[in-house]
Length: 163
Image 1 (cartoon, rainbow, N blue to C red):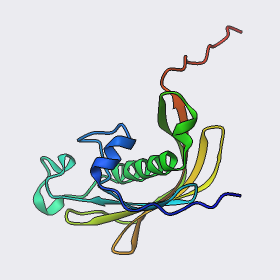
Image 2 (spheres, rainbow, N blue to C red):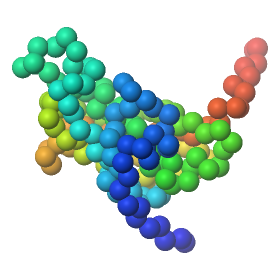
Image 3 (cartoon, rainbow, N blue to C red):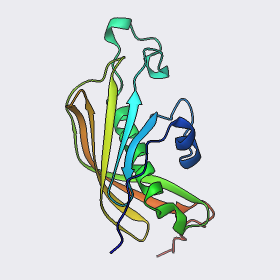
């Protein structure tokens, strides 16, 4: 059994090296901490100037819940990367393959700092089961069990056979 070591925090420049998302769909800002093969804590700072607030009245701006869930999935992707899952394939890409037991608890408004925490439950053959939570000021926003799949972008799609 190997002992994993917690990694120091990382800023947006490090995140951009690790995941393919870019503005306006990059929904995480900083890695607060990570223990590979165990957990990751990521921060999303919600600004009044987010693209998804365009056209909404100032007093009714709420981050779409599915984007909070996507931010949680991106945090899970960071965990997969730092856990070495990306090292096992030639040109890796992480897919958000499934979600179970998702609960949306409350809204996220401009000015909030969302703390996204993911825990790796198990990983086998490029498939990871991850539990995640998003919280603002300690109050839960979203909880979900996610499935992430790491594949190579150079793989041919599976062939279907005529019956």
